Image (cartoon, rainbow, N blue to C red; front, side, top):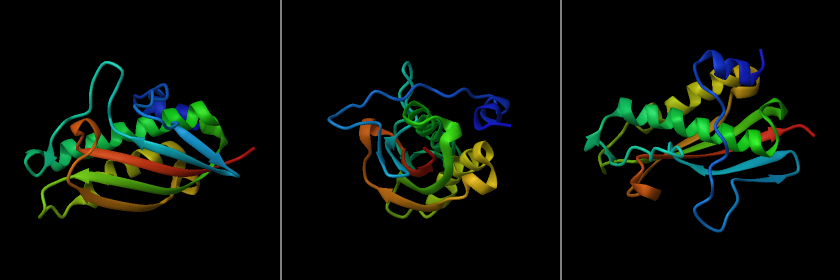
Length: 153
C-alpha cells in the first residue's frame, strides 16, 4: 500500500498545503531534505482548537489536534515532493501550549507520531522527536508541529 492508500484506509485524505500566514513557504528543500514549516490543525473552514492544555483542553483533545496538524504536514509534503517521494522521516518537533506544570508533552505529540508511523510504516515513518511546552502559539492553537523528511529525486 502507498502512504496515500494507508491514509485513506484510516479515513483521511491528504489536505492541500496550508496557505502561509506570513513571509515564508510551506516547505523548503535542501538536498534530499524537505523542511516543513510549522503546522497547526487548522483547516480552510475550521480553525485549530484554541486553548491551553491543562486548562480547558485535555490531553486527548490536544493529541487529536496533533494528529490533525500531522495531516497538514502531509499536505505540505505532498505539494512539494509527493508522499511517495518520502524515503524517511528525520525529525518531528512538537510544541504544546500548556500550563507551566504540565508534564505530558510526549503523550500529546504521540497523536502526530502514531499517524506518521501508520501512514509511512516503521521503516520510513520512524523519526527522532522533540516535544516542547510553550506559552503561546499562532491563532491560539494548543499544538504546532514541524517536520524534516528525507525525499528521493
